[in-house]
Structures are given as C-alpha cells and as structure tokens.
Length: 240
Length: 375
Picture 1 (tube, rainbow over the protein chains, first blue to last red):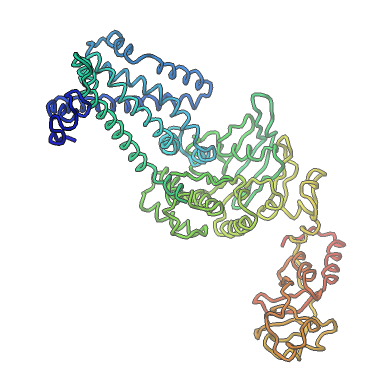
Picture 2 (cartoon, each protein chain N blue to C red):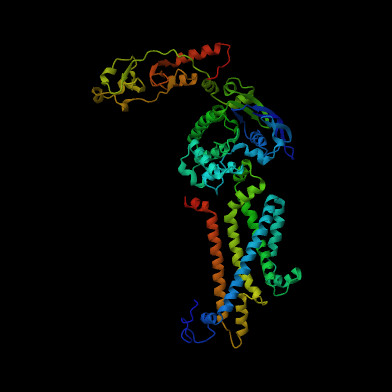
C-alpha cells in the first residue's frame, strides 16, 4: 500500500480528489502521516493500560462490597455520556495543562476506559465459580493472593472482551482530538475538510479512515493474542 | 485431635446454625458429621478452619485454640476437600496439587516431584499431570482434589461431601480407595455427608446432628445401628439397620459342613447323584470355588462332555472365616443351592453353611448380654 506506482495519475480515477488517491497522498506526506499514526497508536494504547490499572481496584471493590456495585457501575457508566470533545476541552481547566497538550487526550480516554472496564472487572470477578474461590481460601491463600493468583487469572477472558471494546473505541475517540489540533490521524480529516474548497477532497479522509481501521484491527489482534497466551486452559476446555 | 467445646454459630438475623456443639475427633480417625440439610454440619466443619467464625465456644486442634492462629496460616496446615473438588481451572493438575506446598514456600522442583507421587497414590495416571481440570471426569477431579488436600502432608483433613457429586459406582470406588489411603496415612479427619450409608461405611465414629445444629448421637457405626439414641436417630439411620448392623459383628468360627465338589473340566457324568438337590459346587484344581452346577439343568447333548465354565451359576457370594455375620448370611442367601460357600484366606473351599445355621448364630448372639463386638 506504500507504493505510488499502483495509482498512476489519471488512470484509476479522473479526478485528483478521488478517495483512491489516498496512496499518492500518503507517499507525498509519508513522514508526517507516519508520525501521526505512531502518535495515534500511543494515545489510544496508553489510556487502555492506565484505565485497566484503575478499573481493577474499583471493580474489585464493587465486587467485594456488593452494595457499592450499583452506584459504582451507574456512575462510571455515566462518565461515558460526556461528549469526548467537551472532555478534551475541559481537561486543561482540570489538569492545568496547555490546550494542545496530549496529556489531555490521554487522561480523557483513561476516563472512558475506566467507565467501560469497572463493570467488566466486577462482573469478571463475579463469574469466578464459588467453589473455586472457597477452595482457594481453604488452601490458605490470603485475600490478596487469592485475587492475584486465582480470581484475576480466571477472569482474564471476560476482562479481555472489555479491553477489546475499549481499545477499538479509543482509536476512534483519539481521532476526534485531531479536530482541536492534537497531531494524530484526526488531522487527516481536518486537512481533508480544509482542502475541500471547490468540492470534497477525499484522499486524506480516506487515508485516515483506512489507517484508523487498520490500527483498531492491530490492537484487537494484539489483545486476542495476549489473551490466548494467558489462558491456555481455555483452549483445551473448548477443544474437549 | 480436634476438640469442639460448646461451639455455637448464630447469624445476625437470629438463625442458629450450630447450637452448643461439643465433640472430639480423635487423632488418626475418621469422624463423620451426618444429618439432614440444615443441621449445621458444613457450618461446623468450616468453623474448624475459620472459614466461618463461631459466635460462641472454642475449637482446638491438638490443644491449639484455632482462633489464636492467623486464618491463612491455619488453613495451610489443614487439608480441605469439597464437593465439586473446586479445582483451579486455570492450572494444570500438577500445579493444582502443588498449591499448598508452594504457598508454604517449598522449592518448586521438589514440590512437583512430590505432587507426581501423590497423583499415583490417589490412583491417577501420571499422564494427567499436565492436563487441565476441564479435561478430567468428575471422579478424576475429585482424586486431584484429595491429592491437593494431602500435598503438604497436613495432620488434619476436612472433607465436605467429597464424594456426593459423582455416580454411585465411582463413589463406591473412591470410598474404598479413601479408606485404603487413610489406613496408610492415619490422618485426623472430619468428614461431612448427608448420606448415612456413607457415614457408616467410612466413619470410625459418627456424629448425627439434627436440624438446629445440636448433637443427637455420637457413636461408632455399629452402636448407631444397634442402639440409636432416640427416635430421630433411629429414623435417620433408616431401614434394614438390623441387617446392616450384622456387618459390624464378626461371625467367628463358622460351623461349616462338608460339600461334595467336582473339578472344572472333569466329566460331567461324575456330577450326577453327588447331591440330593442336584446343585453341585464346582472348584478348580486348587479347590477354589468357581460356581454352582445344576445337573438337571444341563441339556442332553452336553451331558457327555466335561464341566465347563459356561454351565455354572455364579450367583453366590463367598464368606470367609474372618467374615461378618452379614457376609456369612449373604453367602447363604445368595447361593442358588441355599448353601453358602465358606473359603479360607487363600480362597480354598472350607465347606458350606446354611442360612438357618447363620441365624442360629445370630440368635445365640442376641441372647448373650454382651455388646456387639466390632468386626
């Protein structure tokens, strides 16, 4: 897809604004687009990890003290209804950062990830069979050891499902931040919009879409592979 | 030794699960807690390893008050087996068994070697070591559960209906192996079940609990069957208890009669006229009983041939001189000729005994004032 020779001018489409010109657009702006891609990847992945780390204790608390579960899940769920652009803009006020500081995006997306994962973690821990956690207690695990070595490992498949949703939705949310000028793939959409003077100019928009989808697929693949590596016991169980 | 002193469990809503329960589980013996659901047997068990905290009374293991030991440390010293095994699904069989030794900080390599030995000891093929619990049958999982409980060689074991979730054939097998294992290991075991037959089969002593968590009777199985303390225990112990109690009474020297025999492979003609009722006992050349032959039942064509195995009735059970009265009576009742076959320790025929002869023995025992002597 990096090759420009596949789209010699004027053969595949009459107009320079055809979406299929994304390849030539890419080769012309290669270094810039690649840096946006790298930044985009970074900005979507980091909040997933940070969000998971925050959601783990919150989810555990929601599970351990049952009465906390309903308000906790409702509140974190409500976080998701805040429009992303509003959150990006509000962040500097809360964090005291510059408006274009990428930290704003990272923190905002961490908030969304937490919103998604608290419930997932609580439900995942709740799905550990009662006799298994009782056996762990009876073997002499302390509460923390039991969580770390028995309950969390068994919840991995459930948590993985939540992580996949969070990672993919982060890729699309990061793009929104491009509209306020944060340098990532969202810039391609603003560029396309700005270049659409005499009519729509599609190449950067199409390129942005393709790269976002590829990035989301890549994250999904990495998470699935990690899940597979971490849960060999699931494969034998389903193969039976 | 495990000692419960007036142990009570009262929940905040006022429900009393266990009420002033006192009993001693002697070292090296199996104490079975049995009773209907709601009798607090599982609650009592779980108070021993502090999975449930008592609201009154004290529990000692070898004179150590369990409430003075940190729960996690206490539990690492107590084997625990539960109904559905509760194996860790994300760990291999071997790692499941190695759980407690690793928690105790023992060296991984050594622990794994010991775990392999244990797997064989509980009757599991070493090939299962690297499988996951989901790949095992219920009976196999339960064996792993027992191996896991034994792994750190705890002096005390708590077992909560460990064999109730498997089918009756596997259950009987697991019970036999459990008894064999226990005769080697001599653990102090508290065993919970709702099944009185299991309690009588496995227990050195049986504690019958009634709903509300009070002790109805604590006795040996033989005593429970022959002298239930009250109507509740009698009802719970159930039917056939007279017959089952015979299983705890040694038959003693049985008055056997000579039995004419024919050797397997000998000409069938030789069996004719040997006995009045036409049933002839067939033995192998070493005089080990093989089955009963009904001379009248053999069709004319086979009469000229030898005695073959397919002509034999295999219905009768065997009794030995070391048998209980129940086994002796069963040998007579199950024999097609009505004559129960008694063999020596090495399996050779000693003679036969009739049901009425066994009954005479039973009646003589009842007339005596002595208590039932354990088998």
